[in-house]
Image 1 (cartoon, rainbow, N blue to C red):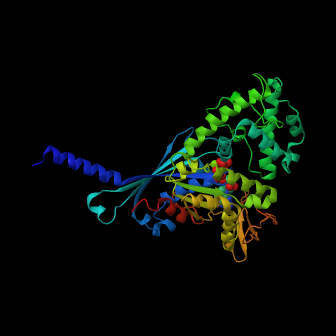
Image 2: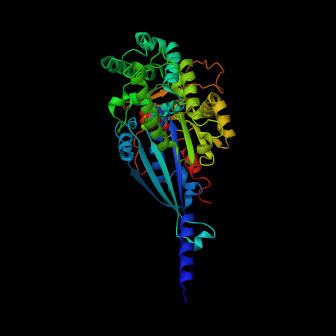
Image 3: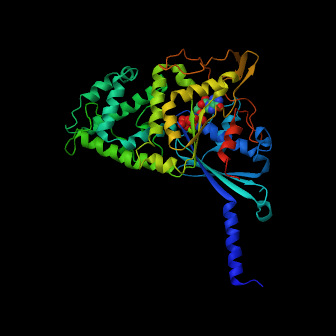
Length: 452
Ligand SMILES: Nc1nc2c(ncn2[C@@H]2O[C@H](COP(=O)(O)OP(=O)(O)OP(=O)(O)O)[C@@H](O)[C@H]2O)c(=O)[nH]1
Ligand SMILES: [Mg+2]
């Protein structure tokens, strides 16, 4: 006869089994602007939706995958999987648009249980959560460790060296000429903010530079009062500067503090606070092509981002990487642009670029693995040459693939590979797995250890 205790015990056991049978993996897809985050997330969903075909079909545990359902969960705007698919499958095919706001996507997977669990459990469920955002915002993370004066000094040093010095032209001198303690002219502040924004945009587009702050000046996203995005670095100021109410210093410092404490911190909490795994995506080819200054800037930007986790014993590293983030995948992206035999060299160049930061992350107990990936393979090798289509055209071109050194030279000086802007392959369809490089390895890596 069923007693009250028996019923309670059975209920408890069932709920424990249910909990055991469902897991959530929060994956931080981390990458600077244009690194390939949106295309990557789109390809992850596409590979999972088509798990019964292509390379995933033969992999454990995907041979036990019963169903896949993705949901767009709006943070500021929903992740536009269908829009991205629409671009990729149009004629001629287009890449997904650059991201303008935060979006979360949730993918629910159901697996057939194995072994003993098969007897007591219906299905095993795993939920994958991914966040997409404009890469520009990532560059603001180092601001969390700075006060306004320190930021001004950093910007002064950056703008003082080439190629920024030339790009900034007389803006550098005008910002340096402002006395921080003098009364602020709001019209001039607005004008200078617009010019600073144009300057950092030119740094990105003309010189492939990465450290372009404040990131929200380039892409504000929703939920920020435009008035709060009005400040500039006063290039003659430093951490000892000061100024009375109404001065340039006080106007800019107040808004900088708001930006750091609410805007950047809010994004940081959203992106990093609850992660299990991190995937760092890096486009190495564009800065390698642009040359030494772009590579140095990328190196510093990546070190700054990874260094946002390195603050001593009570550090963010300890709070975030350990024990929560136990694994990091570092990936050179868009490797379809080089010959398959050169893809590992590209990955090696990336790992050479951030050797010290990677050691630091490993030292924090994080397991790091490298994957040279292409979310959507846009070119194919045919003999000694490659064949692919160019963006905006319908014809195909045959070309000699660029050559990549086996290691990055220590002085980061190299003859940049000449790149073509490839368009996605024709005839991509939602119900076929996109051609790719190593997406199956990476999707497998996301779930590793979650389905034992
Ligand atoms: N050949 C090739 N190009 C790619 C691939 N993935 C991305 N790209 C190119 O890289 C560009 C940027 O990719 P996105 O996925 O938009 O990059 P993102 O990191 O989301 O960029 P933001 O949203 O601006 O931060 C695309 O427009 C393509 O030109 C790939 O697998 N192969
Ligand atoms: Mg994007």
